[in-house]
Length: 490
Length: 147
Image 1 (cartoon, one colour):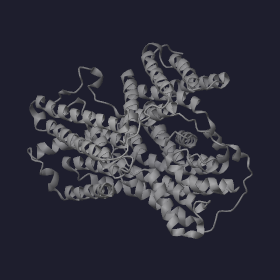
Image 2 (image 1 turned 120 degrees about the vertical axis):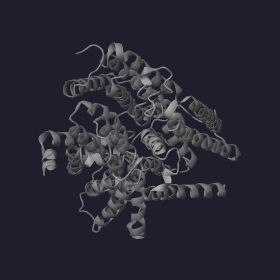
Image 3 (image 1 turned 90 degrees about the vertical axis):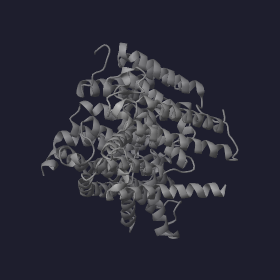
Image 4 (image 1 turned 135 degrees about the vertical axis):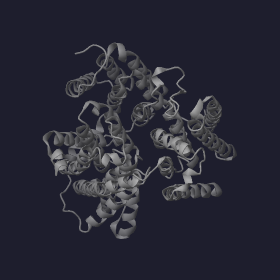
């Protein structure tokens, strides 16, 4: 009750409202993602009350996941990659004059997915966190490897398995820069005092997920023009189709499970949910020509990821996806290290944050039902205005956390080299995850080696370690098999 | 430059980095030899082996190569990049507001936008929002002249 009272305080409600509305607006702007918004704003919450700052960011996460569906439905321009599946059914519905129903299904589906995943987070995260108490250094090291193995499992034709692994290890190598916790000696600082504390992952995150998109948009050879004439077309009002709740429940469950798996993002959740719905509905639902069932499943799926992705993030310190990684940064800068302590020592901040996700879902439900058609026009903001504005915020955000201009240069460097790596097929999600997991892995490895008196056998001894190896192999095997199959086919 | 050429150059660089990283661990002092040095060697070996494997695959693969459009419209891309560096250089002596007041309209014009009213309004809106939210409400300490 005490935690619920914190969430219902006027300042908290204002933070959730502001964050969620901002999230919906950002999500509705093509090119801007939830990772980018959370990553950009994390440094600014540094001076805020931690609970309010986290609630604001949680609201942005939930709001942005939903917001992407609005231009996807009305303009065939997904605001976020996770809304691509929504556009497949939403835009044909708008063209048929059924846009209002598509928007309604989208917001209710997102609401259901968000609520279920927040409930799972509330119920299971503390239980999982308790299990984490049994983890020693060896298990901590394996946990970090598990996080990397998770992101590798998303490797596809564009991001090969080896390249995803390479990006993850590269991130871990970058994390080695700075002071060695074991000996106190400096490593790879090249005499620069700016590198003594190592490379902060926030400038890297802003560079790799915000600035990189701005550089990409700036260099685009063909400007994409959005046909907004359809916004003038009259859209009829319809009741919710019968049996639609079944598809929302399917998407919510799929999204939550996918979200819990490290490395699996909202885009995968949305497409998986969409495909499941397509299989269940059969031919009569007419997928591809405007089936509300597809919108219900994919939107519930991508919002289901919100709470799901926070389960491993808050309990084990392994971000479920890149937005969760940015949120993890917010916890860390407020002195709250993800793990069992979040649910014991910092319970007065963690539980209100989790409860705030329920309110955020209610906020975007209201926003979505009342003003969604007007928000589609946000997608029409010219990129030439959006790029310098976001870039200025990226500079400010990189500077604000450590009050360091060096961090701004780091952000620019990560954006530039990140873009080159991205263009030749490296996974930037794996790179940032390696950067975050590097210090965790090194701490676990070094302490494990001391306890094991120099023998690596310690990483295989305990039952938990054995189970973790099985999970790591389980995560690596399917993409490895797929990779070998592809090679044989060639 | 073609995609394959760049890919292979990057992988060769990665192999070089892995070798340098491995060799550098010999200089780790005392206790770090038994702990951190082993960890860094593990990373260096993993990185080197993976890079070599990928390079080998790339050399063996018979796929048609393609010219890589790395930066798109280079003028706009590098213009934005130069603008960012200039912004960062000016940040410490001039603070956020003065460089931002130049950066936002300059980049908007660079990217082909020509409506002075919208550019002016956007710039003023962003600066006002930053001043109000970050300086007044959140008390973020920005360098340079105060307002």
